[in-house]
Length: 232
Length: 232
DNA sequence: TCAAAAGTGTTTCGAATACACCCATGT
DNA sequence: ACATGGGTGTATTCGAAACACTTTTGA
Image (cartoon, rainbow over all chains, first blue to last red; front, top):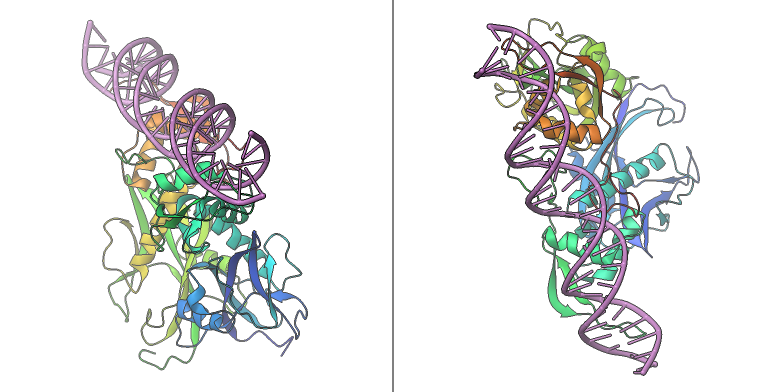
């Protein structure tokens, strides 16, 4: 199998699955037990079926690693086709970004593990690069869409929401300002309930939810808006 | 060839080539002379070589239609893999966006023509959809990067620049404000020269150029900026 | 009564837009 | 002169960020 002539072009689908675990944006990887790249950690995925749509394929492949119903969002990232990205064979890879809300705990096979995105172990092929690419995509989409819905539980307090955003963005933000931005854009709304106080007391927090769990662009025109399309 | 069983998976690269011509964002298409879809207009591109990188392939394919040196920018858009997107065969397509500055006049083969992006003729397969996708990408990138450099001549007046932006964005903007936005972001600078007055007189316009012709993100954080990363 | 956590009110800031007015040229 | 197109000065708007202060709980 290895070092054979590259006469056939294969196509695989890969997924960068992110979930916020212990306040860290983490990616689901599996450890390769066989060559090539034994011991390196790889993205879940596999060969595209001959009659299979790309989007269907990634869902099918992931069903072996996580429950597909746990994925709150998937989108195509990019396709890599460098001839030497995979040794011995020509394999194109179309990568996806997938997000799992923080309250779920997907049962993962024994060979898989979650790794914080900023301290990855040794990764196989170009998979480390794909994780970085997915992270950039997630970060920027959090700024102009309601994609946060895919990272958080159905309901949450604002401090919890801040923690999730901090983990995904990689820097500190204020709960106060986060609230006003997301309220103004119509992304979140209070449920009317209140969460119990913490162990040391403190005012009970109001509970919020995302108004929709479908992707929406809430801040389309950063600048160069069409006349009359004021962003408020 | 047609209606054969889909036993082989092919992979092609396609390009949505945009150029602003006569104040209209236009796409380069070629007219299919043979089935399937005879008479429909298609994107330039072709089969990916067995040992060929995706980026290299799109450049090679385009060399047959336009001089590659005329492309000021190319980037990957997305990959389509719906099994029925191409009749009779399984063909995946990776689409690219390519931009040609307005001052060039690429010699195009007899079967190709430029079509305004908002009044396309009958298009083949999913190519019309890819043009729309490319247009969305161009529009949004004009808002937060210096991608305008790839659409305009080396030097230009501000009214000319406004006309180019209007064509690409599809709505009217003011030259006054465009100038300040691009100056503030460090995208353009005056050359020091002045353009001759128009046919009816008028003050001579200052000549500008883009400071760099490499893609740069000039407005990374729409909101949720890291502390201290004030955008001015 | 005090500390902790949450939330509101208010100010400041800056980018983007809108608009009035001045400048330079050809006829 | 004056029309024409170009450019600058300035006011306004509005979202985001910063910060002070109030509210509500547990100990």
